[in-house]
Length: 100
Image (cartoon, rainbow, N blue to C red; front, side):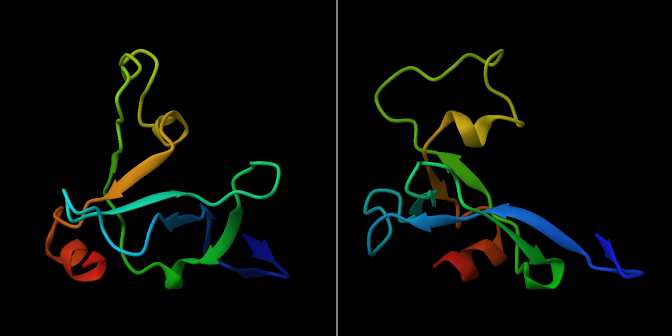
């Protein structure tokens, strides 16, 4: 955004936190869920672009039920369709080092 003639490169983020004290014993990946306030609304934040270390590759925790069809779920709403995600540390070398 631009304020007072100065451009501030930033990103709007929704915060997620790990579930538990250690990774899933079956997958060896951390499981995360969205941080919410007392009313169940996700907690957003604005951060400077320089504070982003690395992108993350998440895999939904599918559970026992059926997942929505490809007509109902896509890249734009997948974070709303699932409540928990695995942080895929096996996506590449850098992910493995950061999420281990």
